[in-house]
Length: 427
Figure 1: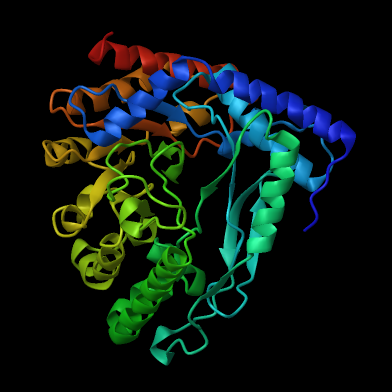
Figure 2 (figure 1 turned 90 degrees about the horizontal axis):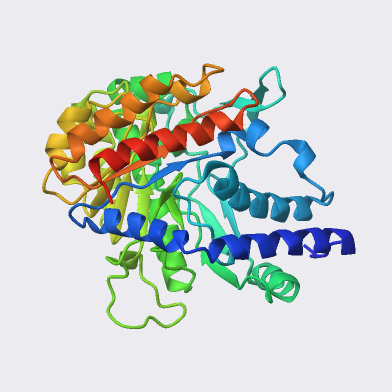
């Protein structure tokens, strides 16, 4: 890919880059960074950070009229700058505005050796919200010979070309940093559901248990092989700073890297990194079946990392005792609206594992007007459970799909959440 932008686009983007640099230099960013760091480090009394993930309601947060760039690459850069700026100016949550322009390695990945067609569904506003895979496996009892081990390769020249272009264009305003290593596919059941339907997956536990174990092992090996390849090739990049392992859960911590002293470029190990994994697809699976068919393969991957973030929307409590409590290097657990909060607060007490609360998105996204009392009560309920137990806690709002054209509602939600947090963590 050749990187070039028109003079008009460069002028526009440099102006946005300067604004991002100004915001990143504000003293409040160091305060926010400390909140995330203290929480992830398990410092007693750490004030919980609060952040809203905005991309799901981009119809409101990033409307078309904001954009001035017309080229695809220009709009991608414009979107990144605008999101960082608007998080601070419109939401003022605990996002830490990046003090750099970040890119990642260009890696080509062929996960299964076959193409899996995906159908997408749009809502009344033309926003894509749903999708459906054309699953290649209809009956796992027949095997999965058509599924090949994953292959991957690095486009080093492409990465260097993008870095050079961005550095020449914006480097005097924001340093350009390669901050993202290859995306490792650790969420195994998410990958599995690309290959077969939920019904096929569930029935395979009874009809084809050996084949299911074999396929889960191959998916584990795909992730493990890519991770070890990236480590050997020197592609791993420390992710203990202003990066997200899962959604908008920021990684700031002093607990990584595990290696002591300065680490030479290309010498980062998997044990120096956060890893992330979840299994939303097994909500309907008993704890015993999850432990038998899924947990061993997640465990093998978790052993490779320095710290692990577990979960997304699935409730953690059902599989906590038998499985998750034994997951190696576990440091943070997603607590969704379907979790038994009191149970998890009790279980995490004294373990220095982050209680990563996902507030109820319906309270923010469904009604045109924010129910302030209900929203505050949802935040307060969590703090009443975690603060007395000294459980490190963070709030990350996800899966809000519309603000009904009123971004003031999101800002008000931030203000109310901060007020509740202030009650438990004054000063």
